[in-house]
Length: 399
Ligand SMILES: *[C@@H]1O[C@H](CO)[C@@H](O)[C@H](O)[C@H]1NC(C)=O
Ligand SMILES: *[C@@H]1O[C@H](CO)[C@@H](O)[C@H](O)[C@H]1NC(C)=O
Ligand SMILES: *[C@@H]1O[C@H](CO)[C@@H](O)[C@H](O)[C@H]1NC(C)=O
Ligand SMILES: *[C@@H]1O[C@H](CO)[C@@H](O)[C@H](O)[C@H]1NC(C)=O
Ligand SMILES: *[C@@H]1O[C@H](CO)[C@@H](O)[C@H](O)[C@H]1NC(C)=O
Ligand SMILES: *[C@@H]1O[C@H](CO)[C@@H](O)[C@H](O)[C@H]1NC(C)=O
Ligand SMILES: *[C@@H]1O[C@H](CO)[C@@H](O)[C@H](O)[C@H]1NC(C)=O
Ligand SMILES: *[C@@H]1O[C@H](CO)[C@@H](O)[C@H](O)[C@H]1NC(C)=O
Ligand SMILES: *[C@@H]1O[C@H](CO)[C@@H](O)[C@H](O)[C@H]1NC(C)=O
Ligand SMILES: *[C@@H]1O[C@H](CO)[C@@H](O)[C@H](O)[C@H]1NC(C)=O
Ligand SMILES: *[C@@H]1O[C@H](CO)[C@@H](O)[C@H](O)[C@H]1NC(C)=O
Ligand SMILES: *[C@@H]1O[C@H](CO)[C@@H](O)[C@H](O)[C@H]1NC(C)=O
Image 1 (cartoon, rainbow, N blue to C red):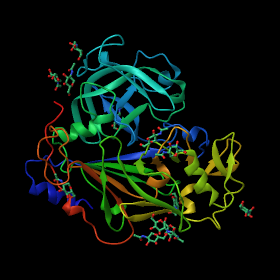
Image 2 (spheres, protein in one colour; image 1 turned 30 degrees about the vertical axis):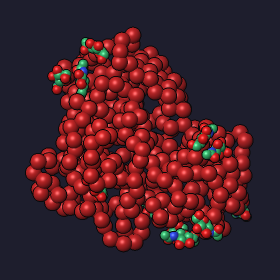
Image 3 (cartoon, rainbow, N blue to C red; image 1 turned 90 degrees about the vertical axis):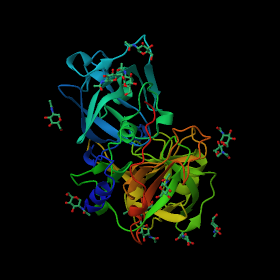
Image 4 (cartoon, protein in one colour; image 1 turned 60 degrees about the vertical axis):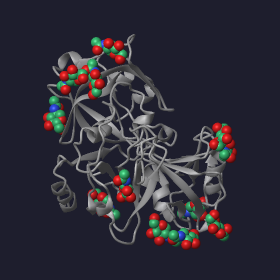
């Protein structure tokens, strides 16, 4: 399964032939629909090592943000003390710039909670890739929203343009800048089978072609902020739904599909049995039957991406063991024309995120080709286009 990746590497001797696969675990399926709105509640997580000797942290792999942070040993908030905490004084490779009062500090508001702390450099090991002098955040304060999280911290995979931590690039972008990858891309597979032990994987530097079938459809990721694409339209059961949505963001850190309130109402109105629950803030079903429910289809790059009812009827198991179901399509009054395609979408479609652009150069510099980045979403038919993806032309930026 790795032959394509290895072949590409041998042709490009200038590149280090690194790919690494991080297996992800997942928290159980007893998601409370209110908690499901919080970014950290759905958890596709894996272990990273920080420092020398290694301090281990479980981080959520989040394509919907750009910073790496873990709790600091100095943090006394419950969200920190219930998790592993980073102690730079126990690491011979740490380069500590400041503590709370100094610069650069960092502060991130995720919507579900806030994190504040200092920025530090240390060696970060992700799979087989070691990043010396990786800049990350050590949280001194984290709101209690994070206390229940399966993850100690977050590993953001979106663009550096929306990173909050000054002083260095986020991990994936450091891999790119330091030419550590044989392809400047990472791939995300989330197992559609919720009961399987292997919940998902992130492959840095390549693609696991066992994880999808058919063509990878290219989408332009512009502007460089989130991994986002133009949304061409929306149908439910083959009928157009009129919304003002124009943009789709791909986000492993959101457990539902979120959009402005009227758009969510318009979709759910076409799904038999979906009833708005004011207390839960989601559309619920009186039972979990999938029968008679239509597909909901997003048009991306001219292709139809359908979510079958099994993909959007989400189950919640209460502590008493009762199962209730609700619709993944959720309204949020804070959203304008962007819809966030979270885990229900990414469990249905494989995605790979490719950086082959030159945005670090001054805008006046002729760039050639399609500047920027693309990402691809698998469809069901056709042939693999992977070989056409440019490899290893990372430009040393940010340093
Ligand atoms: C840290 O994680 C690595 C890789 O998962 C593992 O081999 C190692 O034993 C862990 N170390 C500690 C102290 O838990
Ligand atoms: C910490 O960072 C600030 C701002 O970048 C810089 O002025 C200061 O010299 C740095 N301190 C150390 C000890 O590197
Ligand atoms: C980290 O970066 C600083 C400043 O560029 C440098 O002095 C130091 O040697 C680097 N450390 C490692 C381990 O690369
Ligand atoms: C941290 O690393 C960044 C880039 O990796 C470097 O520019 C900066 O000087 C480093 N800071 C310290 C305190 O080593
Ligand atoms: C899902 O995974 C479970 C546990 O491995 C397995 O028993 C079941 O057959 C799988 N279901 C499907 C549809 O593959
Ligand atoms: C998408 O689905 C619509 C019907 O809902 C159909 O008319 C259209 O041809 C499909 N587009 C593609 C590219 O398959
Ligand atoms: C649905 O919307 C598409 C794209 O806007 C349009 O081409 C098509 O004619 C519409 N179909 C119906 C039945 O309104
Ligand atoms: C499940 O809910 C649907 C829609 O509300 C209803 O039509 C159906 O009869 C229900 N099925 C059962 C088994 O209760
Ligand atoms: C619904 O979508 C699934 C893919 O998620 C597809 O396999 C199925 O054929 C679609 N059904 C209809 C009626 O379009
Ligand atoms: C889209 O709809 C939302 C919700 O009604 C509204 O707040 C927003 O202003 C609309 N945006 C545009 C560009 O029409
Ligand atoms: C929604 O977006 C439109 C177009 O970008 C903008 O004009 C409008 O002010 C935005 N509305 C809100 C509530 O942010
Ligand atoms: C980026 O990749 C796309 C798709 O393979 C290709 O068309 C484009 O030319 C590449 N851009 C550069 C600058 O190589």
